[in-house]
Length: 288
Image 1: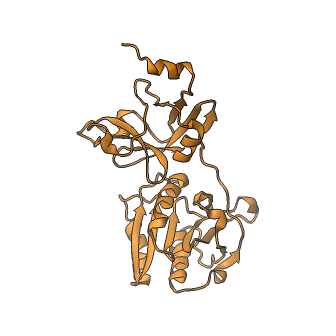
Image 2: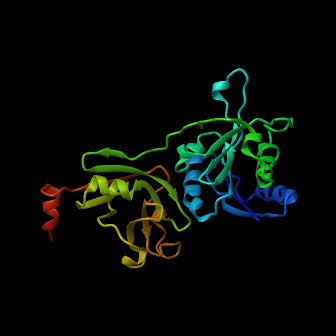
């Protein structure tokens, strides 16, 4: 049974996802389709890559991952530098199918790809108008049938690179940004635990949000270290800073996103107070 994961920005209010699955099941009954998410913000390849990077390790080698976000190829004879081709990448035993729009460069370890092939079959006159039906699904079916990647098209040794927003480092300060707000209102920030340890070196710190009346001064190990409806910060399973409210869903205080007024792209400041600094000394003798 072949596993296929789907990550798209198609949403669930229209028929598009059902049509996609129907085309796959119509061509092969020996498949198991897993929805990663269809609610990716339109054209937001960074969000899609964040989701996919978090699930790859949970699937067996040989899994086929369809990256259906901003996946419309762009082919122009007059301006080949701007072309965005459909490609297949084999990485750590997994297969990734999608448009070379930069998303492949956001996959963890992409530089260690075992094989990358540019799909060159545009025989259908509708291929560039409806690439999912006429390019991506046929490619997935070829993988299911065991065809070698060398038969798909031209081998290439690189993918289009994009650079997502990175934390800004200043003296005793990390400026991060919100990269995702999940169903529970938990706010994911692009500050990793590794960066936190390297910059903070064990010093006290304060996490500030755009609403200055809210701040956090410690990292929790789990949500239950604070009372219900209280804010907290922790590093999630993927190693990113997460701002949350313990059981803070609608009707129970609200999630961190709504309560703190945080959205994707907002800035989060993490200020460190080195030993001997005024801020550090003042914290030892708080005023009444």
